[in-house]
Figure 1 (cartoon, rainbow, N blue to C red):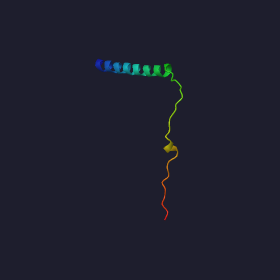
Figure 2: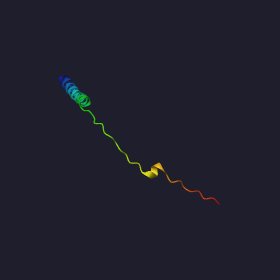
Figure 3: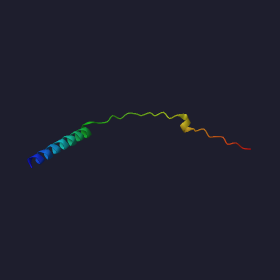
Figure 4: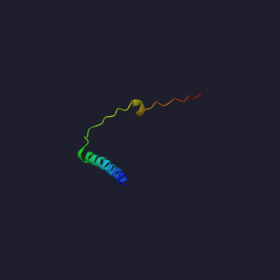
Amino acid sequence: MPTLFRFLTVLAMIGAVIYGSLLALSVLVVPREREVTVRVPSDKLNPVQPQTQTR
C-alpha cells in the first residue's frame, strides 16, 4: 500500500506543477496587440466569368 500512496502522491505533485505553470502563464503573460495586414489576390475579389458561346 505504501507504493500506491507514493505513486498517487507523485502523480498529484506532477499535476499540481502543470496546473501551476498553466495558471502562471495565463496570469503573467500578456499578448501584444498589433495590426495584421493580409493581401488578397485580385482574382479572388473579381473572378473572371467564363464566356458563353451563343449561336
